[in-house]
Image 1 (tube, each protein chain N blue to C red):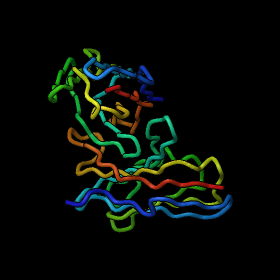
Image 2: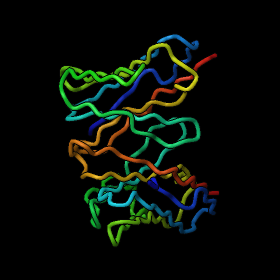
Image 3: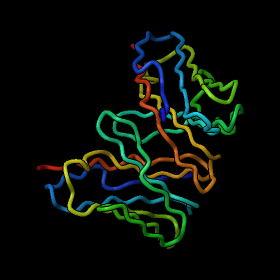
Length: 108
Length: 117
């Protein structure tokens, strides 16, 4: 069945360093969504990508959807302590599937 | 406006007991989802309602799990004969538009932490 896998599972960075998490699907996706979950919190929607090769930016966050629509990435420039949390990719097309997330910790 | 709410926030029960978990979606949201999340994992899909009907219940692990949404708003997840392996955070999410539409952003509730002793 449809699976979404994320790497790395954990990432620890110094404040100010960049961070990237990758999402890979076993099947072609019609869309990909990204969510952030703060420690002790619940997932909060960040963005949805639907077009092949699409790139969207939200301040220091850059989201990409691969040309083949089977992978996606989230890049954070110059991380801040407020970026701490777990970032999940997922799709709601067909089946509702999430990856296991990348947990980001930031050392001040 | 008010977000998705879930009650109770915590539930501790004994193995073999019956539990009900409640979800109040955002007003006007026709789509409602139940997930469960274990530590270190992403949300695991359980069931999706569009309106009053369960459009996809393929994620329910077995027949001890059942969910209803009789009036197309509040939903209740019911677990019979609970087992220790059912311990997890149960998340509810709602969306304005049906699953698979271009704008099916899910708004998650705070979850119910279920502990089965």
